[in-house]
Each structure stands twice: as C-alpha cells, then as structure tokens.
Length: 80
Image (cartoon, rainbow, N blue to C red; front, side, top):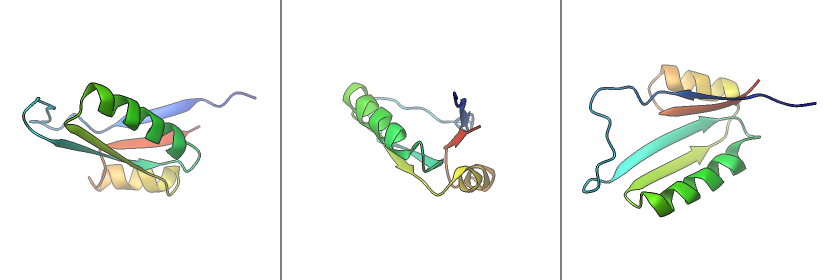
C-alpha cells in the first residue's frame, strides 16, 4: 500500500527570501510519520544553504494544517 505525501507550502508571503547574507528560519510542522524524513531534508538543505535554518516538528498532520492557517509555521507536512 503506497501512501501519498503532501507538502503544503506557506512560503508565498511577500518578502520571503533566502539571500546569502541573512539567516532565514523555515518552520515545519505536521505528520509525526514524516518528521524524520523532514529532518533529513533539513540537514541536506543546510549543506547547500548554510544560512537557512529548518526546524521540523511533529504533532500530527492536523496540527501542521492548523499551524499553517495560524501562520505559526511555513511548511506543513502531511500524509494522505
């Protein structure tokens, strides 16, 4: 049985940019199942963009969607 992975991006806010001089934090919340995968992605991305800090957190897909709506995260990890 295959699970489809859905990433909902909230990075469309005006002014979001990861320029090389400024440190940027990307907040990720959502699926507990995906938190280890998101952490791996964050570590790999940090090697390419050392000024970008990605902080993945679990809590469940519903928590991630709520955080995205409340603007307390930038990316929601969810599995459908």
